[in-house]
Image 1: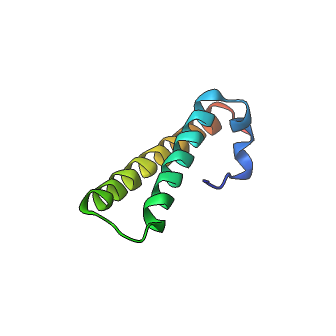
Image 2: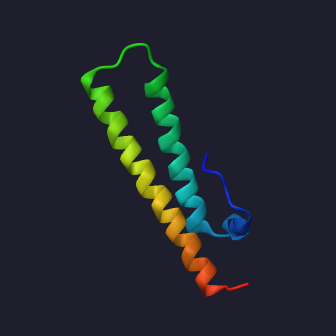
Image 3: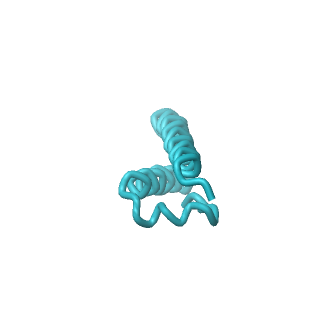
Length: 75
């Protein structure tokens, strides 16, 4: 699971952010399944790369969301 920063308290109440978190966690779980299997087919390796890219994309979206929130709600 992606580590939250202390300033990310708002994510508890924000549906969009929670959906991104859930998506990130699903990709992580799928990656773990592939990484823990003894044998890797070519399809498994391609899927691993695809999932890593998707997971990174979602993480970038989460960070952008947090930045937008901080700009909209300065301390």
